[in-house]
Image 1: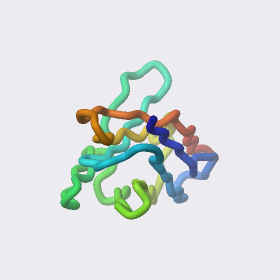
Image 2: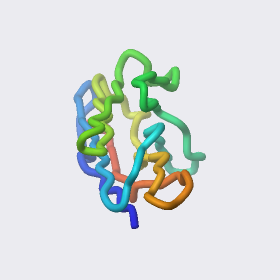
Image 3: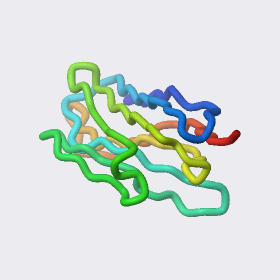
Length: 120
């Protein structure tokens, strides 16, 4: 079994910051790409940022220069530092990890989602 636990969402004023975390636990042999996605009401889920096992990052144009994705391989954790938040960043944020369990193949695992609301 693999479990992903997200934390760090909340309500913040425009221009503020939040840091999201997503920790994986369980029978994990290896983790490849880690990523963050978001889904606003009435919209499709979209990619926010990804980071490979080698540390290569990729960002949606809408968050470049404001968000930073990072990972701690020893803790099986991915982070999303969000600065200069805007109302349009309001969404449920999900982490997705590409995980290989012992004796199994690679699978994508999703976190439960954490709400981020940017409002004055």
